Length: 126
Image 1 (spheres, rainbow, N blue to C red):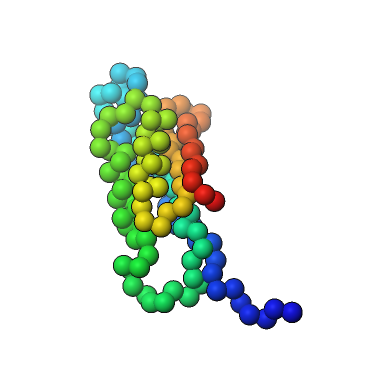
Image 2 (spheres, helix red, strand yellow):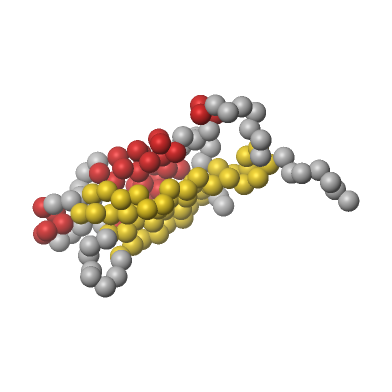
């Protein structure tokens, strides 16, 4: 019988419900003014020690940086399609150090009165 606890676990950094305005869409009113979107992101960091060797922010993926990258990528320029924006964002997040996989969802919040329109993308290793 093994009585020792595991030394590592699979870690995922998650940002949920990040809302801001972005220049996105093909309709005339979408090209003339930004609209609210919501981004949910999960970043797989793979196996991580259950007890890190120190408590230093420099040795982990700083979620403040991840949040700012999401906002910057989604507001850098007008994009016609959600599919284009989510691909660009997923690619950028995969470039972060230690990230093995990305799951991201971008929702347009004011397209229809009766539903949310969103695209999800998953890439990398989970």
